[in-house]
Amino acid sequence: MTTLERRARRIVLLGHPVAHSLSPVFQNAAIAAAGIAAHYEAVDVTPEAFAAAFSSLRDADGAGNVTVPHKAAAYAACDMRTAVADRVGAVNTFWVEDGRIIGDNTDVEGVRAAIAALGFESLRRVRIAVLGAGGAAAAVLEAVRGEESAVRIWSRSAARGEALLARSDVPLIALTSDSGAACEGADLVVNATPIGLSGEAFPVAPDRLAPSTRVLDLAYRRVGTTPWVTACREAGLRTEDGLSMLVAQGAAAFRRWFGTEPDLDVMWEAVRQERDGSVVGGS
Ligand code: NAP
Image 1 (cartoon, helix red, strand yellow):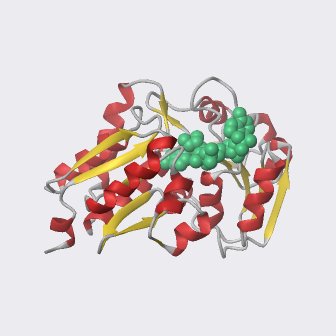
Image 2: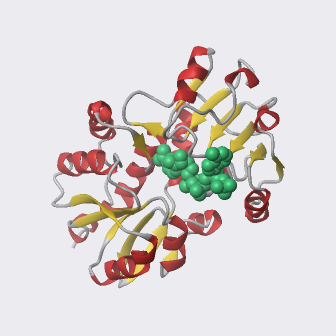
């Protein structure tokens, strides 16, 4: 049996809430384009119900994604994890092999692709400000691992920031409680907080950023883009929102499940068509 035949079935996205997710839209488009007999489905699972729901996928030979707020719980519940998932401490992609749930973290590939879309040919010694200290921030640190990048992290909670620092092996790293100070002299600023998913707030004012700074907002909206990306564009800065990361992490997951390359143009076309939809987004 080929990987593709073995995995031809129901693929789930476990999250809470999850109805807003764009993942079913572009994954099902790519699955259909590849002629695979599978269906990708978002399933709302509360934190209380997560452990049982996830474990039941072991017997069902399941595969899928995990999103907010379950990535750390999925990490703990997997039977085996990739080295990348171990370093990030979170799982966003899983599948079953020989009755064991394997967990991976394709958000890291998503971050790398989004940074490449901003025109960085290399991250070697790039100065980066990371706003936020949760799972997405950990994926950014993993993406720059070994690059000798200088990283400043802004975290509103000192304890969470210190926990992220403690598990990172990025050598030149510092923590600050001032988002503007974190961005001073940065080549790249990454918003890894949910600020911008809804409402009009900015993680940092665009006038605190130098004209040469490139901006990556991991948040995205189904309609248009985030207020911060809009304001940074108006200030003349080069920007990307979270859609480029979303599609790239999904493409990497598709490769894990089906052992074949998804059609990225089909994925992007499906995402663009959905831009007439509703309000907020996460993976
Ligand atoms: P997370 O683990 O909950 O971490 C969120 C971080 O943001 C925490 O450090 C949190 O601080 C901080 N934060 C939350 N609200 C804040 C506020 N109002 N002001 C300042 N800091 C705030 O979440 P995550 O999984 O890292 O996700 C973060 C963002 O990345 C979300 O917008 C998510 O949608 C996005 N994301 C996008 C993709 C994609 O494919 N585009 C993939 C993954 C994540 P506290 O600990 O103090 O609450």
